[in-house]
Amino acid sequence: MKEKLPEVEIYSDWWAVPNPWRWGYGVIMSYGSIKKEFSQWYELTTNNRMELSGVIAWLSKLKKKSKVTIYTDSQYTINGIGKWWAKKWKENNWYRTKTEKAVNHDLWEILLELVSEHEVQFEWVKWHSWHEENERCDELATLAMDMNYLLVDEWYIPKEEGSQSTLYFTEEESNKVEIIRALWKWDKSIKVEKEWDKCRKCWTPVIQKIPKHTKKTLLKEFYYEYYFSCPYCNTNYMTKDAKRDIKNLKL
Image (tube, rainbow, N blue to C red; front, side):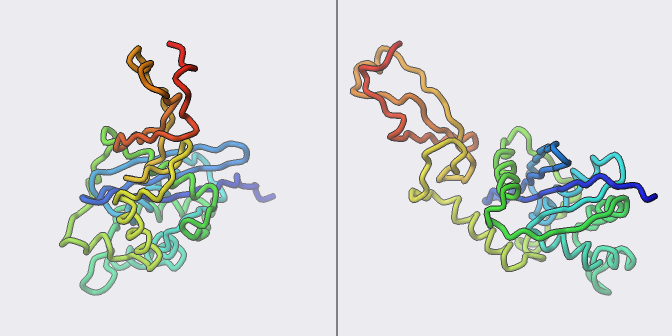
């Protein structure tokens, strides 16, 4: 009787900080009622390396052969395995053509090995189609932007500006990059009204904080019970819902 394999779902997404470009990924592993999250940022790398790294991060944590479904908006990752691009590159000593070396072959080699250990299928998720886990991966990626936790992608090889970063961009991925560029300009049309809303300046989810009040606060007509703060760029947001009459303030 054939052994029934554990069924695991992996969700992955990337995010970026332009000028200069820094990239990160967020991944979720779901197995039955168990759900685990992980994210990481790098000083300088590419979107495609982050997509591959995110999938590798969780596949490498599986301790027994499993039936794995990987959800991603990266057609680069899906086609690399599903259309056997990476396998063909490896058979050709990692050359895409007679003269051009395959990009990211260090990660493709690891991914091919991990995929061979499990029953893996990929499912494409359209970016920002409001898929719950995909949106959460997006949040995880942005939350991991703390400069203190940036890693060095030692295998990343910079080329002429734009060459490696855009080599395998699909039309949708290019649109995503343009959206990221636009969001990094101050956009006052974006409403910040509750915790985890995106910062207007850098698109990082904001967190709720309680302000410190002193006797000087009593000289004002009102005070704010709480406010929202961006953990990345330190931009603060005051909302009408948090505004209180100064008579209600107790120090």
